[in-house]
Every structure is written in C-alpha cells, then in structure tokens.
Length: 467
Picture 1 (cartoon, rainbow, N blue to C red):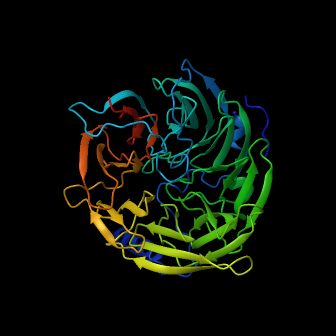
Picture 2: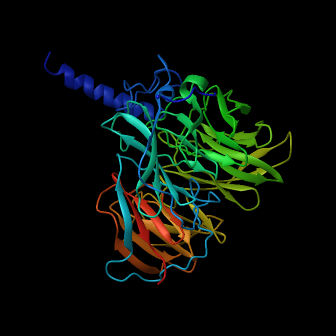
C-alpha cells in the first residue's frame, strides 16, 4: 500500500503454577488439538504484537540525516546469505591463510540495540535493522562501509520488549531500493541512497499475519523488479512491484499456515522458477510467475520454532533442517504442472544432523552446518557424515559462511574460526577472539575482503585480506 509522505490459600499459587507449566509443555509438544488453546508466548503478549488500532507506525516514520558518507570500496552482500542467497562469497579477493597475534584487525565498530540482525552491503553502504530502546523505535540504519559512521536512519515508533534480541532480520538492497521487514512485520521500501520513503506494508493489518515468537526473522527477497514476502496470513506469499509497491500476485493460504523465522528460497525445479517457504505446518513451492502453489507437504514441520531456510540441492531436491529434535529431511520434487509431488528421500536424526538456528551451506557438492551439540559437520548429499570439528571445536548457535574455499564460523562468545571448506576433513587454519560480548549469532557479511560480524550489542568490521 502506498503511504503518505513522512513527517512518522498457601499452596494454591504454587499448584496452579505447576499446572500451567505442565500445560504449556504439553501444548508445545503437540498434546492438544489444534485450536483448543492459543499458546501465549512469554515476553510477546501484551506488547502490541497484534495491535491494529490507530494509525500504522509507518505513518509516523522519520528520516534523520547524519555525517557519514558512502565509501568508495568494492564488494556487495545485498541481503540474507549474500548475492546468491547461499552464504558463499563469489568474490576473488585473496584472504589471509593464517592470522598473526592481533589479527584480524577491526576496521571499525558500532554499538547496536540488542539483536541478531546482520548487515546488507552495497555501493559502500551498510544497511542494518536496529532497535532504539531509548526512543522506542524500530529503525533501518545506513552506515559507511569505510568507517561505520551513520549516513541516515529511518525509524518509526514501535513497542518491542527484550526477547532474546529485538531485531533479527536483514534488509535486501539494490542500486535503487532497500527493503526491510521489522520485528513486528512492518515492511518498508526506501531509496537506497537517500533513505527517502517509497512505500510500506503492515503485514499484521493488511494480511492478518501473526508475529512469530521472538519476533520476525524472515528476510525479504528481491528478485528482479519485485519483492517476495511470506505474510502467511490471508495470503501465504505475495509479490510486490518494487518501484510502486503494487501487489502483483497473492498465493492463497487455505491451510492457515503461520509465519515462521524462515526466509523464502528461490529455486529452479524441473525448469520452472519457484519460491520455497516453510510455514509452521509444512513446506510449499510457489510458481514465481503467478504465485500459484505447485506443491506442498506436511512431512516437515517443527513444533516450536522453524528457523533455518530450505537449501536447494541438485536433482530437484531440497534439504531441510531444524532444532528442537527435528533433525533433517531431504525432499525430492517430482512431476510437472498439475502433478507435482514432494517425496522424502531420507531423514537424519538430530544427533546426526540438525540445525537449530543457522542455515546449512551447499558448497562443491557437500553440505556444511552446525548440529545441536555445536560441532561443525560436513555431509555428503546422501546424508552421510564425512567429518565433524570434534568436541574441541564447538560453535553453539553462531553463523558461518564460505569464502575463498575457506569456511568462517563464529561461536556464541565471538571466537572466529577459519577452516578449510573441503570434504577430506576438518582442518583448522586460524582462530581469534573478535567480539567481547555474547550471543554472537547475527549472520556475517563478506565484502571486498572485509567481514562484518556482530554480537548482541555491537557490530564490527574486520579486515581479512591477505597482505
């Protein structure tokens, strides 16, 4: 929707508590029929997550200009998981093979609100979803890649409570536009250079979206001239023309799937371009041209939180993984128009491989990811574990990416490790403490040999280039 210009008895309590805890656990484990009770999520109820009274927060947005300037530096990481949405850097900038004491060096650092939102980078600008607790405002910040100084900040009033981080999505950016999805599902499209507001969508108001527990984690997908989003309310998925905000198509949601923390994955299947999305009760494949649903399956669903996104695998297969004992599932998509099917190929139990938070990487025909015990794992495409990093090298819920044939992986406390991204075995190259905080879970970005990382309250740009 186009928006106007911005100006924006003693034992009874204990007994009841025990019953409530038991009921909550029972519901989470699927012990009650759908619709019998609405599970109330701690820290989310009562903070306006579904409040649609009064004007939309987007109508009260403001734009603040600052003294930073765009850097004349190479590199692009224009959204979630990089240029190809696969967490692999396509750049050929040589990276150091070892780190001396004190390396890698920090180029700049900035303080942030509590969160796990990673950076998007293009044309010397760094884009970051953030939350200003003092102002009680959700914000999209634009920083200089050279020194981290703020160029502009677009913000709107929003009540968000501390909930294992307050911001966790990554914007998507082109040379002309930047699109963000805030913690309570407000979508904003701005001019990428100036921050000027173009259009916005309040998914809760306009599509009946249910804000996920721990707030939104879906990162927008820009595909050519359109933005692809999954409201998972009255429509499962929508395509929006990026230049105008016009909705081009809507995918029905007859099974009433709710929004998860998963981001949409583009994938060519049997010669047809599709978008893959995991709702809270299954997986769907949608045609890119008209939004029609080609197939769906309920063979994959996670009872508490669905976070890692689908990973496209050769031969029309999709690798799915999750936490909370979900393990993994390889799907194969077969058939053609009017007769599409999603068939399970194999499953892995959680001890073999599951991914609680970060999406695995497909690199040179092998899958790399961190399983629930924190070990980095390399799998072949038949689900066999080729190697693990072992008990001495565990990484918790931290992010990872591949660049120059190396895999860079962060642990929860900010220890960055570099290893060979190869199926022959885990070969440690270097390791250094690069962050001093905790919950260093935000996805990393690699641009021109610079690595942008963050913990709960701080973002740092590191120089990884070979001297």
